[in-house]
Every structure is written in C-alpha cells, then in structure tokens.
Amino acid sequence: MSDENEIVRQRKEKLLRLRDEGVNPYRAEKWDRRDTLMDVRERFDRLQPEESEQATLRVAGRLMTLRRQGKATFADLMDETGRMQLYFFARQDGDEAYDFLKKWVDSGDWIGVVGHPCRTRRGELTVQVDEFTLLCKALRPLPEKWHGLTDTETRYRQRYLDLIANPDVREVFRKRAKIIASLRRTLESHGTLEVETPTLSSLAGGAAAKPFKTFHNALSLDMYLRIAPELYLKRLVAGGMGRVYEIGKNFRNEGIDTMHNPEFTMMEVYWAYADYEDMMALTEELVRNAAASVGALKIEWPSGSGAAIDLAKPFRRVSMTEIVQEKTGVDFRRLTDDEARAIAKERSLDAGPSRFAVLNAMFEAFCEDGLTTPTFVTGHPTEISPLAKRDPENPDCTHRFELFMCGHELANAFSELNDPIDQRARFEEQLAKREAGDDEAHAFDEDFLNAIETGLPPTGGLGIGIDRLVMFLTGSSSIRDVILFPTMRPKE
Image (cartoon, rainbow, N blue to C red):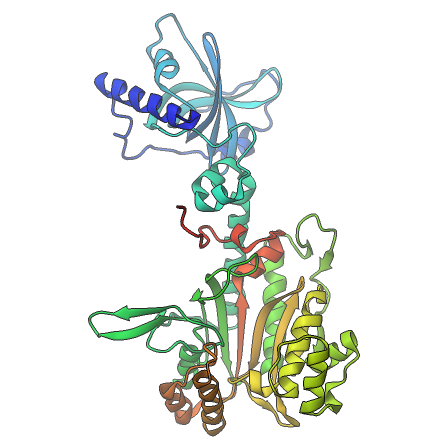
C-alpha cells in the first residue's frame, strides 16, 4: 500500500471514530467569516514584535501545516488571499478545544477561527486562536506539502491540488480574470454590445478548421461544435446591431501542443462602418490596456527567457510579401505560379499549386517564429481569406491582418467581405476544396449568404485568442498553464 493510501485509510478510520463521538465534520452549512487574511495583514501589519491587539477577527481557510509543541500548536492557514500563522494554546489542563485539535485535526482540514492579531517575538504576524470550528475533514493528504506540486501531469489533471500547492498558479488565473475584464471595459467604452451566439450548429463556419461532430437525437441531425462565432456575429451586424462582440469557447478537432488546446477561448468583435485599419488601432488599444491591467506593459516571454518586449511602443506594420522577401530574399511580386512551385520544392515545402499558397507557406515556415515584437502582417492572399474584402488595388490580396507576437499569431482581422456575389463564388471555391478532400475548407453557408444579400454594411472584424494573450502577459510557456482544466488524454 502506498504512503498516500495508508494516510487515507488512517483518516477514514479517524472520521469513523469522530462520528462515534457524535461529531459530524461535514455538518456546517456556513460560517460567518468576516475577515480575509489579506484584510488582516493590511490592518495589522503595523504591529511590532510581541505586540497584540484585542480586535476580534473571524477568519477561515485550509490548514496547510501543523507544528505541535506540547501545550502550544502553530499552524499555517490559507485562504484565497494568502497565508498566515495561527497560534493555538491550552488555556488549562484538560482544555477540551485544545485536546480536540490535537486528537482530531489534521493538515488539509478546513476550519473557522475566532481570534485576535499579534506579532510573535520572531516578527511573524499571527492570529492567536480564541476558538475554532472544524468545517470540513480532509481525507487525502496535501500534495508534497513541503516542496509544492511540480509534476505537470498531476498539476493539469488535478488542478485543485495545483491551486493548493502553488500560489503562483492562482495568481495567473486572477490575472486572466483581470485581462478579460479589461477587454470588456475597452470594448464597452466604444459602445460595443456583448452578445451570445450558438455553440452548437448544423454548420461549422467562420474559420478553416476541422470541427467536432455530434448528433442531435430529437432533431435526428448531425451537428457541430463551433470553430468560430464569426458568421453569426456578422448576421447581427446585418440585422442592425451596429457594434457587437462575444467572448466564448471555440472547439477545433486538431492537435494539442504548448500553443493549442481543442477547447479554447476567443474574443470576436465586429464594428459596422469600420475597416481593418480601425481594427488595428482597436487591437493595440485592447492589448495595451489588458497588459496595463496586470502591470505588464513590458513583458518577458516565456518568463526567464530574457526577451523583453515593450508593449507601450507602436506595433510594427508590414505586408506578408515584404516580410517574406525580408526573411528569405524571394520577391513574390515578380513570380509566376511555376516559379513559386519550384522555390517551394527547393525548400522542401508542402504548398498548394499557386504562388499565393507558396507565399503563405513561406511565411509560416520562415517568418512567423522571428516575429517577437508585436507585428501586424497585412496583405494576405485572397485564396486563403474567404471572408475578407479584396484590396481594390490588388484583387489577389485582401484587406486583412494577423497580429504576431512572441513568434505566434495572437489576432486575426479584416475588412469583412460584404459583396454577396463574391462571397458565393469564394464559398464555391471552398466547397470544391472540401469535395477534393480538404476537411478544413470552409463550409458553404446558404443562410449567411441570405443575410449579406439582405445587406451587410462596411464592417471591420477582429478575433483575439484569449488564452495566448494571457500566456504572453503572464510569462506562461504552455497554454495548459492558463486554462484551468485543459484537455488531457484519460489515464489507463
């Protein structure tokens, strides 16, 4: 039997004996906590060594450690705001409360404490316990209580243990909440309305990705988890809702690595009467405000890499053609399809038949990783941008940008295609690719065509990956570090 299983066995036996004594450690339905440990620290950090105050405190949390010393016991209490030392002592021989503590209370248990603040001779701010209540008995031991939980598989599979053992992890998710709150504040300051659109749909559109498929029994219908909310949000703009945004889950049935999780959080924004240039300005504002909300205008990603990035500086703007020429020396403005295919073969690239497909493949292979400082890459080929408006001066390209930062894509935006004839033709091109075996080609959405045939005003659209933004602003090296419950392969 493992040490942990033996501890569980012993604690279950203790629980049975405790119940035999007439005590149910799960009886409490609530406890009147009036002070967090952060509140206590802020109010009484002024106390000097061996000084105390008779203010009554009511705190609660989990006991992390217990250090018994005869008729005195020191413990560490943890709540959601931090940790603080507790001091229990026997007031006289046969003190029932102290005897209960010694006999029945273990590390990991939840307790409520009534006491008063003091500072020990060694200078540690402490709550001296006048009375306490056992709120919940822990049957399992705390994870590696002296060294923290470091096994990554256990951390991701059992996030509750990770949050108990590693306070820095809780801080990452507090920052995530602040970042999302900042995004909402910025958008709402521009009169943008938050909406919700379907997660389950009969078509998976709005991006080039492989969807998750399911079946609706009542309707006897194949359905899909959404890969993007884009087409629904543009329907709302066509319906006259002006400026809208959504923050929600997307699902893509693709690989898992440090930058990708099958279930992830996206924010999409659509503004009537705006274009991709407006979306660039909005993106800078959103990212900069989010960084400021967690004190991260200068970031280092990943943490400890030494790569400092100043988000206060204007973001660079460069076309895909220019950056490929800059990094590889190849000028795609002067190439035929045959010449581009020959270059792809020379460089062992698996690209499509056109020079535009090769351009995109060259960009992905030789440019993305080097885009450390925030960079707007513009001028994406029309054939890989089925929902973006063409550049009137160069119809082979679109008014689209992707924001790259720390060597990875963070945002995607464009002047939305609102010409229903052009949109239908592009859907037909995507349908031909799908029928040829490309399961990531865009679906043909007849109802969306009906919506823009009704009339979609000039519109700017933007999508930002929330998980990646949180990664960059917190120095986290894996997407699993910023998703509370990432997708994991089940254990055998």
